[in-house]
Length: 461
Image (tube, rainbow, N blue to C red; front, side, top):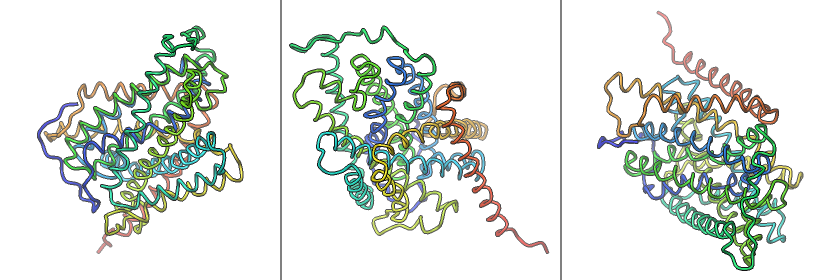
């Protein structure tokens, strides 16, 4: 990414603009380091063994290219609708509305997954209050946090993210000491697990890939939060550069340790961070990291609820959702948008009561393929808008290097992931379900656009 001293246009929304660059950066980390890492990494290793690292490298490369593309567009046009707005500018209102609704629905599911996941982890070390009650408490608390001003929300998220980043660094240090035999009286497992690198073959890697994509999902929230950030062009560029490399280090490093220590079929993969630390023989470490994982999931829930509310707010402003969802409180918070974004999370707590331990796995399997569609749309939008800007001689405050080649590489990589996904029955089912959902949403957006156009058409004289 290259930055020029060109001021980005000020956001036109009535939202506040008090998020600081450090808060934006940590929000990007907070939304990505959650259930996907602390729970999904175990599912990925279970599916592919150590070959899950291939899944992480492929998905990691794709998310770097997507974030560069989003950074360019967000710096030029900071908007709470982010890639939904960019898709509308590039491909029309139906495309913009469809991708906005799809991402909002994805986050609504993720919010529920993170509330139940955090509750399940806390229950595993403190089996006093039922999981569904804990999840309900989390939903109430974080709904309240998201109803305060964005400055307080940003500061809260900043310290939440700091805590889990510090915990992951400590985990990586302990994991390295365990693998190299530096811990006293604890035998090292070595790297023998990598001898059977891909126990389930290409099918396992494909299955793990969609778990991994879910893990990286949410990073794009940086482009949404740019609309409420001071000096968007500078803040977005810095946040993207920082978030991308940190996520890759934390994810690849953590999964490498987990895959080396916990073989396929290990009970420890249900809570992989705690499983590794228990094997390291550190008293209380497993419980401590589980508490940190709870904080991590709640931090991601917090950030994703923010993202979901801002997306539905933007859709409402553009006439793609009911108008009441764009009303702001005195502290410039879209209260109704927050309320509708948490509704499914409350429903999920009731479902957890009725179907214990069944809801979280179902939720984790719902959203992996939607991330691919969102990222693909972002790359296509950037390709169209960048070519348009270059043709018109429009200066951009932030430019993606290697255009158009890196954008095309991202689209090719995305296409290959889809081909591999359709080759696996489990992920193929996800993809088919996602595309059916897209068709339904697109039909609704198209009908809405036609209806509005008809109402505003000038009668013939």
